[in-house]
Amino acid sequence: MMAFEYRGFRVTADAVADELGVQWVCHAEIERTDGNINKDGPPAIEIVVPRAKIDPLMALSALEHRARTDIDDWHEREQA
Image (cartoon, rainbow, N blue to C red; front, side, top):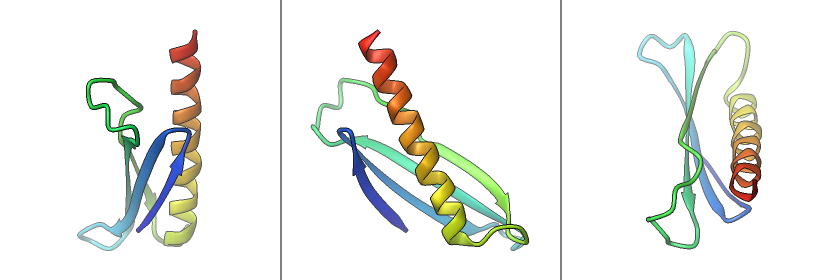
């Protein structure tokens, strides 16, 4: 599991093998750090990658990059 804060959000991510052991199922929750549950934020992210092609650390790194990009995009939409 991995957690980090970025631009007012806390991202908690994990990667687990699927029931057959052939894919990594990666999931990230994105929560506001200001405690305001009445305002929206970026949605949760889920990606699935083959275990034969990527290790769990690389999968989490891809998920982290995607979360940061989604948060940046969300901030751009909110300021537009």
